[in-house]
Length: 210
Image (cartoon, rainbow, N blue to C red; front, side, top):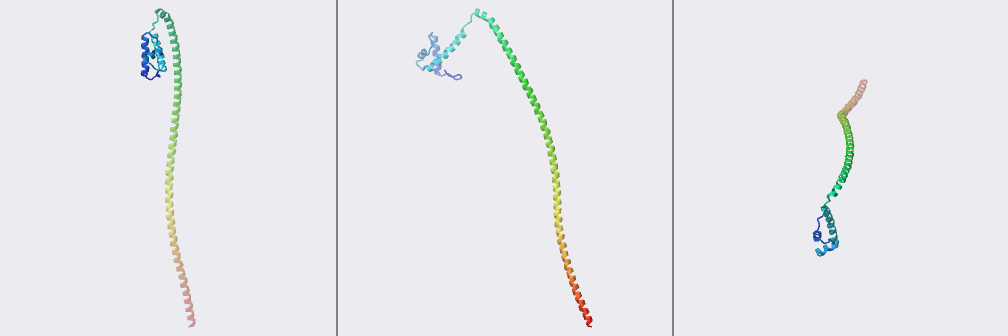
């Protein structure tokens, strides 16, 4: 037979219909009688289909079999009692199962609530941490700005120092030039004094001669 969930082949349908025709004629349904009916074929193909047809036929016959009234009357109280017991057991198990499920769900709910509270606490903690970090960042930014201002002032002072150094160097060069001029003037004065002494000496010599 074709596997469950797949459509039967045309050959299987033919074998199935042959079984029904043979049964309707009041003959015995077997793989041999079916093979003769369809004019040949493999027993490995025919036998499973015949077996399936017989099982289905048993179900049909069982469904069509009527239960006598006296048997039904005898079985009805027992069936009612059995049904009551089955219902009681089923209801008890169902209630127990529902209670168990409710307990599990309540436990899960408590766990979720606890986890939610933990998450809320963690969020609050993280918000406080972010606030502290923001304040520290603002303080660092302020310190950085103050440091930049100090660096700017220091650079200005350094520039002024360089300018003053250049001015001092220029002043030193000017003083050196003045000192050089003074030295030349001193040398000229000394030379003039020597010449004056020489002239005075010559003048005295001339006066003595006269």
